[in-house]
Image (cartoon, rainbow, N blue to C red; front, side):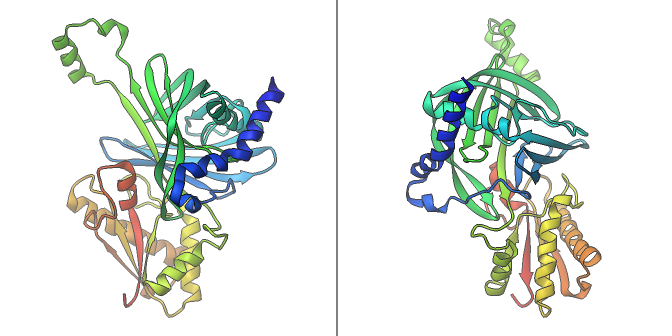
Amino acid sequence: MRASLLRSVLLFSLTCWGLMLPMLAANASSVPPIPLVEGLTVVTAIADKRGDYETLKQVVAVDGANVTLAYRADVPGGNAIEALRPVSRDDLATADTYRNFFSSGDHQAFPGTTALGPSNAVMAALEDAGETEFATYVGLGGAYRGRRGTLIKTGTTTVPVLVNGVRHELPVVQAEADFERAKAEFWFYPHPEQPLTLRYRFMEKEAEQFKNLPPEMLKKLREQQPLREESMRVVKIEYPGGETGETADEPLEAQLETEGRAEVYGIYFDFDSDRLKPESDAVLERIAGILSRNENWALSIEGHTDNVGADDYNLELSRRRAASVKSALVDRYGIAESRLETDGHGASQPKASNDTLDGRAMNRRVELVRDGH
């Protein structure tokens, strides 16, 4: 049985790029490699009535036995979560359980589970049979839910994601599951090393005892206690090496050289705060390196937000975030303060629609502008 499963996994891994390319049709060649390497960072946006918040999963170690992830999230309300989890290579290949739930302080493995997306075995079964047994443990807003059922493939499409600062339409396999208390939809990117869950949505079912209530009574009940719908979207993926194997700062440096302006998406802040996350260090170091190599350059650091919240507040937040980037470059990397100016524009210069999770994520950014442009 296990030998048969492993054969299916191997076949899936060997052919998944062939499955992906037809999905992309004309622009298949634009699919970035997204290697499973140390430094790979997957940023997820989750909608909340207090504003979108982001979770970060970063690969901090890769060896022949395990891939180790660091997880960080600032849930609205002050609930900060930090965890570390090794996932075995065997589980990446064959596990039937996707555990996208992290508790603060957890530094342990959960055998039989994956964390970035489903296993290759799950993807192989969806491709071969169209369905498979599947379990998921998800955490949204600090709540924990575990569900098991049959996962059924429903089609293929693409999902827009910022990969190393460039918007790509990534090919995905769509699937759905009818769990005991919720219906769920998934969008899986069929990567040969580690499939990624780029999006999911859970819709709570009506409890059996409420189904026969009179319509007016049920309507009043739902006004007081709406059925929950939980969703998440991967909005950014960053990995070292750039898209062409170059060091990641070379395209940024070239853009500043030729265009005088560059958008930077690898700088992360705590929710509703100007405090930089540690995952920003790699990009800050690259910016410092660019300034060190170009001693005659001066930069303006500009902060931008989405439109959630009051305009005046967003303007001030964007200014404070730009100032935090400047302070880090000056205090930690020795860049002369006179070479850096800061400004903030709040939500006044959007790059995308603020009506969607991925659009708002594109609008939350830092831009660098070279002096004289």
